Image: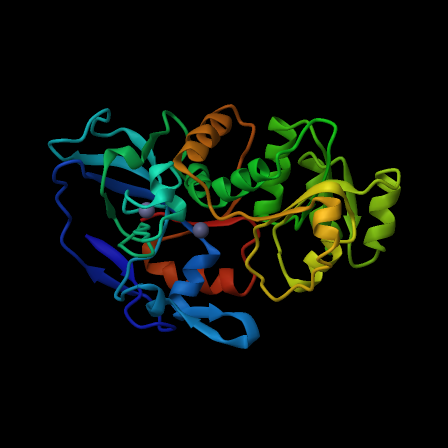
Length: 350
Ligand SMILES: [Zn+2]
Ligand SMILES: [Zn+2]
């Protein structure tokens, strides 16, 4: 089979001829139809990312080994099944849960394998979906798609559950006001989801009027341009001087979070999701007196994915697929994403 692999970081991916894996025990072999191209694939390709103080954090220090087939947003068709795998048959359409843990740490024990101490994620720590086939370690990581399209389903396993779990972490109630920072792909999904499952009043914040227009079309009740408006003033006007009950920040840079901290009502939740990074100076006394909760939110659990697939089946949420690529174009796909030339989600169709 062919796989697009990162052999050397920052160099074009190489199309390798590999043996088709044979599923044993609980394993299942998937013929990949759609593999989403995610921002974190760029970090793998570049061999790391910029950490605090401009320090380069290497992927190999986190246990990533090259050559590696990236691709953690994988949807496809079951090709063959190990003798102990249950509940699935050949040719079924499935979405793969990629955030696989070792199964033993406290996070895994409560079903949060995405936060495992020793992660084994597909497309990060083991070969993923930029290939004709992917070997999934257990049938337990598969969710049936029925007739759903594989291209629009693939991004649910990373972009989708990240947005969904962030919305869950904000614990929104129908009378709440929530600010969603960033109206890109993830922010838009969060707006759709918050609208569908919480009843909260949604204020979308971005620096781009075009994106804000789309946010409004996707369910935002109000929009604020944080470049041209005084954010605090606009938010206080929208909330009768109360401030907001929650902020979900898909940028999560020093500047955005500093602003987030100025628009909060007592008991507010601040959910940090984006990976822009930086540092924050906190007024420590206001933390207890205003009872703020700052939480980080990273990908999501398989429970989140099952719920999300169910919502997607009913068309409550629909990722926007903007570009399609062949396996040979994997490097082009990553380059375009890095350069900001992919508006929705790029998909590789091996
Ligand atoms: Zn991802
Ligand atoms: Zn674990």
